[in-house]
Image (tube, rainbow, N blue to C red):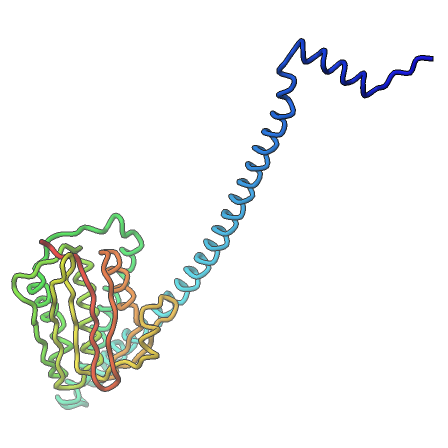
Length: 294
């Protein structure tokens, strides 16, 4: 009885097949190579999937923060617009119904209150308008050559309706030959908000000074006051978009901190930086940089 060993038979047939087709020896190698390639591709896909999930979580978090910030922002704007209008309407109603019941000093006081409320509303609307522009910075960003001395002079003139009632001395210490390369509207907004902020926190007969230092590719601009200053704890929250700051000025001026957020956004758009140096009862310095026009 003949018994055939199956292993020997397989080896014999393989040897015959390999003589007919030598490439058969390459099959195991190709299988191993393809398996390794597939494993690498699977790992890459898994890594990509993790990255996408991470980006999704981050985007979801950012979107949630934006929605929360905008909701709070709209609520604040609605409140801040209602308050000054209510004051103006109330004063006009008093004068309409009995202007002859008040002497000139009382009438002047009413008018001053209405004027301050109107100014506050105008500043708020200006910032609101600029904020909407900020949502599309790429289309609205248009750097031009700006004479910094003239820009500060113009902004001091605009702010005089707020500084004069407090007898604040505004000093333009910018050299006449200093130029920056910046978006004009954004630059005005930065200075206007910082100057208004300085007026707000400066006492009667105080002083505000705007100066500059030319530092290579940038110009450092300092808006300084000798007002009430800002605590170290409050400084940490100044430029955070989720924490609007309600702080009363030396003459009971109100504000939300929206202006400082715009300053930070616009300075960053120019590739600059902004920070504050301040001590309680010793005044504040807001320091920011804009590209130097050389």
